Image 1 (cartoon, rainbow, N blue to C red):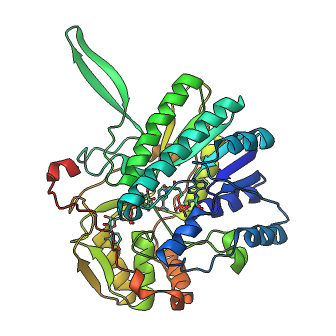
Image 2 (tube, rainbow, N blue to C red; image 1 turned 90 degrees about the vertical axis):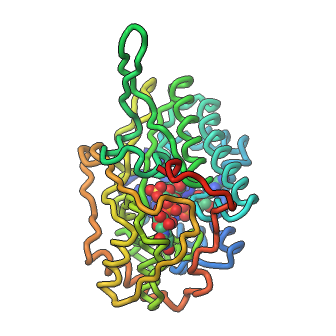
Image 3 (cartoon, helix red, strand yellow; image 1 turned 135 degrees about the vertical axis):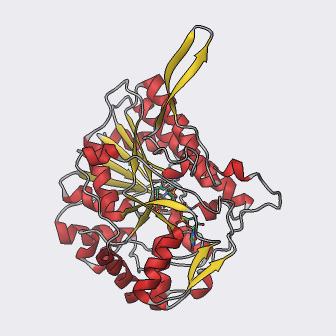
Length: 397
Ligand code: NAD
Ligand code: USQ
């Protein structure tokens, strides 16, 4: 299959591109390298020393003999070139990772909020519009987020995969309906993913585009069987307060003896997935696209759920590092339960990589190896989400 991987230089996109290339797909990466520019803006670098994209691709060719193409293009800004690229490459599928993906970054300033909306919503719309203009039958696999559902909305009922069955009372009796699960984003970033969902629903209905939306949990880990083949293929590892996600941050903090930065009581429950399972899920999604004319196919791309405090206790027990309870800079419920249905990937053969202590050690070793690269001043999250107005806790559910 010919696959265009948008955002293929990023944390999920790079290992996915290598995985797809290693199993015989013809891969081209499209990326504007904005994530590398944001590192410069934030004056922080990936904990792991990632190589320039050209070198990454040369090394992959040396190691695997497979070639991956590269197009530097801004999905949100360069519509006409995008149409040309689709026409030239004629891909069978596009995997869309190309968005600003950090919730704290999206909340740090008005400029960051506006950039996140402009970049993410325009980018997704440009892609859908360009596919229609190309006249090609290109399947889309998009990386969405568990955060579109909100947390704890449905109590102990599992969050379904995208759609909710509801009963509508009418004077003639009850109607059975299936609706998109209500959206309840917790940040401007998460809000852009809920807007993406509407764009997908419209283009599936109006133009019969074949679209899969993967509602992914928090990704942890660093290496996959391909990125580990050569140091120059190493994946990125974000640890700073804006881009670092909770489990990888805790692993890095443990490696340097920094108290684990739990926000509040750590009562927030979130869904997780290892990067090795992310790449496998994309492969499964590519192999199982919806048919033309079908509704958007939604998968919950998660393997486990944990409370933040549980993760901190586990890592503290393994490493002896202290746990710090910091004031929560975010506007989020102090505690929530989370039960998620992930039957679709399991039924298609995903065998989940659970958070066994062995894998935690592997990630801890990466953090240990590169700990001299840590800038300690970048660890604490500085993006404060509160505008001073108190909201009702009920709105957080
Ligand atoms: P990342 O920031 O590491 O990678 C995103 C890539 O997209 C970067 O290389 C960036 O340069 C590129 N990009 C951004 N805007 C672009 C544009 N306008 N044109 C072209 N390229 C552009 O992020 P990631 O962690 O790899 O996440 C990838 C996707 O998966 C995102 O959409 C994110 O929302 C989703 N996701 C990530 C996680 C996670 O824990 N990392 C969890 C759930 C969902
Ligand atoms: N948290 C801490 N301490 C930290 C960092 C985070 O207690 O040092 C807490 C946060 O307050 C939050 C939880 O951990 O309650 C998760 O935070 P996170 O930064 O790991 O994850 P989040 O902001 O939700 O975003 C990440 C990715 C995003 C993806 C999302 C999946 O950056 O791209 O969409 O995970 S999900 O959370 O399932 O929506």
